[in-house]
Length: 185
Length: 289
Image (cartoon, rainbow over all chains, first blue to last red; front, side, top):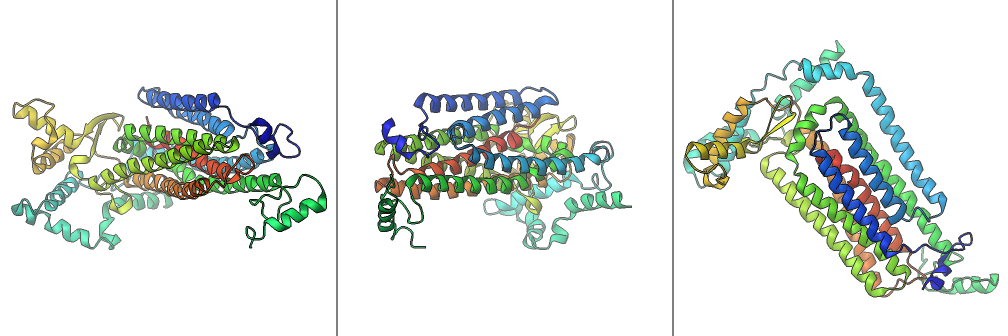
């Protein structure tokens, strides 16, 4: 078999295409599964700020195993690896520069998110909001409980003009817009 | 344009003209001199395609990074709506399909036709399994009203209840309501929710929600990014199924051998990329602390 497969080899590759041995395939798969269990386990324990870093390191180890062995990059022409790396570098630059820009404003953002909720954030009456949904829920079962029908009606009417963004998005939009206005002035 | 139909005669002609081991096989397209050249060109082509895929997904990963760095509280709160169990099972399914995809390349390289067909079938089955589990998850979200953007209208009984700046997960309002009602009526605390009327559960859920901290503003955006990322990934899984059905059809026709296995290899590379994306999506969406 191996002598046959060497006919596929590129001129520069005298060893031919690499056939990954079964033990390696299964070993990589078992490792990937074990790492998945590990990342789920670590997420269930509060490890503080390093949580995200641990999850990303584990994901990257998994990604390397898949890329190098399942995707044959370890034995592929280096140029193909270079092509793939270039995409990761550009994706990295993309995210990094965007985040650098965001982090410049992070103190203000954090303050707005935690310490001083923007105006309007407190305004929506969540209980009333949920009561509406409960009524909607009840309206769904109006067939079985005919007496509940009138409860859900006004909300159902609200639903039908779902295209009307103005009314539908009301509670959500007010604070985000108020947020931006506050920053602008 | 008519590469496959005119492949054989020019290929054979080239072999005569150049006088070294050129391959006159039927799979050789006329614009390639050798099978190796054809294989290498195809391989570089698929890697270039994967580059565009990485950049395609990177837009969403960038949006995710910015949103999460700006509003960590939304991710902390809303990830409780996702079921880690289903996410982990789907990760396992996709990892197994990556194993069978890699194995299918090995089978083709070694002329193992039965193994090739078996591994292709397993890969396709896993892809369908993944989509099935995704369907269960999406269906629950639609049922609970926890979907993207303006359609985010969670029903009271399915709202996540947290405390202490969203750090402490108290439970799902409906479950807490059922528990309270059961204890009040002298029943076991583990009495299933179905024992109580939906109205009672909803009403009690509203009360429970009023006793705890309100959800952070704009949770709907978590669901927007969740559906955008997993949805785009799901579309790639569907595309992978179509590609693999095409490979399976050709494998059943006996097209592939140790001399010609490029398409099996290339589709497997695409499939591994779909797996790679999920390897990052799973911790980023399901495992947040």
